[in-house]
Image: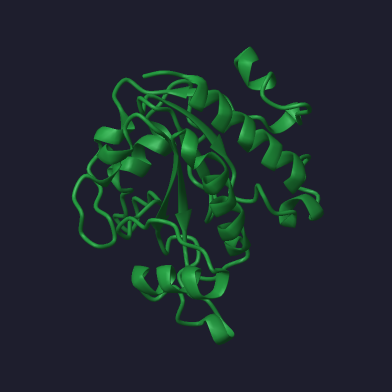
Length: 214
């Protein structure tokens, strides 16, 4: 972990700070469409710091929507963007009154807007998991996010709302787990970092990336 990330916040849980990942080519050059069909969506984020997060309709992690949007509003004037990428790989079906929220990416986006009063740009629906038995392969972006950097990226995404904070040139990344910003896993005894500390850590990573010039 570079020294400068520790200079951007008062306190840290060093146990769960991410390792800086590096890439030979820019992530912003990877083709992916917006939900509305705009080509090469990532290219317009080049020169900015971007948080990419995989989303769904309603799941245990969906309460992070407004927290993530609040990060966007805090840092957008400094060159920070957020991109929500829908997938059903980790929560194909919701239940009860939310049963329909994961049916299509459009319904995921509408649920975000209507239930969480949140507006985030949406990409097209993608596959994230790699499953050789059923022939499932990740979208190229997620193949690289999970396996394509150096040092090792950390392996497969574990659930909805993993957060990838991408540098201005698209060649560096900090990765935060899906349960950051909520205390679900923390309360279950699986984590050493609570949501308040995770927010401090994520802000520090954003600030480090924002300080870099392309």
